[in-house]
Image (cartoon, rainbow, N blue to C red; front, side, top):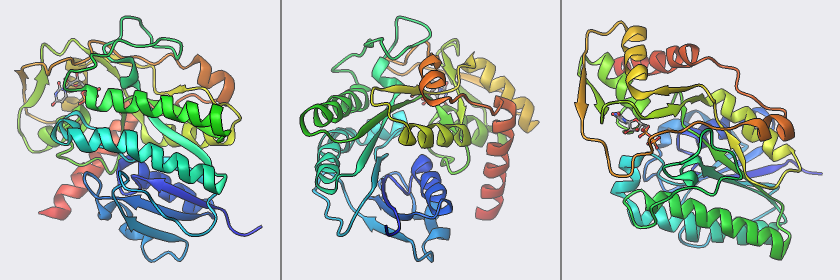
Amino acid sequence: MGQKRVLITGGAGFIGSHLCDLFIQKGWAVVCVDNLLTGTKENVRHLLRQRRFSFIRQDLSKPIRVPGPVASILHFASPASPPDYLKYPIETLKVGALGTYHLLETAKEKKAKFLLASTSEVYGDPLVRPQGESYWGNVNPVGPRSVYDEAKRFAEALTSAYRRKHRVNTRIVRIFNTYGERMRPEDGRVIPNFIAQALSGMPLTVYGEGRQTRSYCYISDLLRGIEKALESDFHDPVNLGNPNEMTVLKLAKLILKLTASKSHVVFRPLPADDPKQRCPDIRLAKKVLNWAPQVRLEQGLRAAIRYFREKSSFER
Ligand code: UDP
């Protein structure tokens, strides 16, 4: 057997680039595919000299040709921050729909495992708490967020159909809010926004009254979950997230404390269809993957704050 080869789409993005690192460390050959719409080559620059690493700049709404064997495909390409997918609505729908289709065709042809990065957004503005995998969700199919939510729901449906019809060996992970190093300061999601604002002395922009909740998972915990999902035989969707739920206002205060910032909080309008609550039920992940997050929020936030500090001093 030659060396195992993995295709990672969105490989220059936040989660994708960490996956590239992980598979290089495991001794695999890594083909990183990204169109650099929201990802950046900076995230993988340290890998470019590696013989086992290759980078393809490509938009996945067009078919992809990868010569040679591929053992696994990890499909992580998509704008993922609400401001990003609102800015690139058609691209988001295309990569979730056409991109997933082209990669499932590749998986079928190469007899590769296929892992879809899905999302807690498939539950929309959920009416149950916590959200278990059997909940079908509450999504506005024509609202501004639908470009992401419905693209991922379609991607799950297509992945399931390829499994049933063509016996492609698939996995679906539903990723809840994740944070850590390599998020862009201008990413627009709540943790990078608050950290960047706190460090630059700007007010922290809390949307609505800040009573909506989220549950934040640190990147290293998520990576372990993805690895376990890929190694398991479990094919149905599985939640990966940290069930430590808190309000956005409480998060703002925690980041102010951890950065020792003198910034204050300002309230801004709540975006349309912003989910009021989000908390993963992770009993299935515990049972079938023997996975649970380990990193406490303060610990993960300290690491992310350090990264943002270093990045801003480097760029000055
Ligand atoms: N949010 C906020 N201020 C910001 C950015 C986001 O209050 O500067 C809120 C947002 O309205 C949402 C939560 O924080 O309720 C998480 O938003 P994010 O964009 O990180 O991701 P989402 O979970 O909505 O996909």
